[in-house]
Length: 529
Image 1 (cartoon, rainbow, N blue to C red):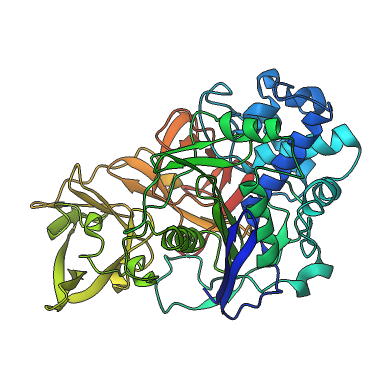
Image 2: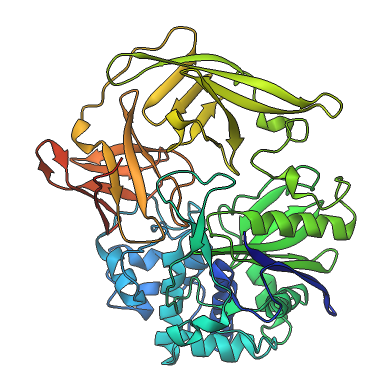
């Protein structure tokens, strides 16, 4: 993370701003999905003006959008991410083209029954706002949200002419392996954006003003009853909340009509993160204490570092933190085990064996190594083929290592079964399990596209189950994802039958599928593994 900025805010205004690293206070950062809050505020203003209602079907406003049962996909469902549609369509940039891609997509569950975060759903909301008013969404965002909140340094769309105003976004140089501390970084690809799911860029003072607007319950932008409905009419689920040692955890998380709503210590806390190619941001607004935090960084958007900073800073400010200081080493992937006991589930330390594709046994050993007896600081080390290397826990359930045998894919450990998985290998204590073989070896291998949102993935055979593994990417799956066959050559991405994302393999040439289509984005077979 080359740099960023943090602001502490209350209902009266901004109380503290700090920049760090290579960031300056006047630089703009892309807000990513925090832009969804500004889109939602526009939608609620148009509802106040009678342009449409929460129960208006999206196909009534966009009649060219043939969704079959589209009458059930309403403005309310789209605001709550419960429309039953895919997360995104990053193969094309134009919003109407992305929306058009929904016409032939499957929906596995009825609208309103399942929370499934959808960038595409908010693109539909932006198109609806434009269609109802005859004006571009960026113009509406500027007039109805940015101006009333005095966010005069912000932009509601980004073109090449604006590039010099932004802090350069950064991303890992290599997209074919998990990032480890010390790995090279590079300037992230530049993308022009105006979509309703991530169109705003702002300096830290302006993001602080947006947080202040939420703390003041939308005053100056929405009527009180509209804001109350926005945060009380919640859908069937909400965003995952990053759990940090020493920071109070949220009791509940549910997505309202355009913002995530948490309960922390009985208080209502509004939250939203944002991830773009090269940028990560986060906003918190505690309606109970009247305090909020805004964070901007130019870390890549698949990292929750901005959320970690925001939640820790907020807990320190209101006195609820149990950590002695603002200490990022408590979140590090190589963090001390005594600080994060939940990170070492029973059964992870020991000897494991697997059978590779050639029928040979692969043995690994995971051990705790103490670095400092006085502080009980220790780390996990994996040994294989005479070499040892540290295991580094990611933000989620993946465990990466610099061991050359296992560098390109992270491990995943299942404490319930005692299974340690790496790619197509399944390690278990004791005797190596027999290797089951999938019925479709023609689909195995590496696929890639030119989309920076989801650049590369591998399909492996794990005990007869096809599994998709994406090393990195803002829109990539953050965990190893089982592929469940739902038709000839067509697979659902994920075990939950309610998930709408699919992967469809292309023609087989010389025993190998030459491409895989991920919800309209074609990934071709890669010549590298």
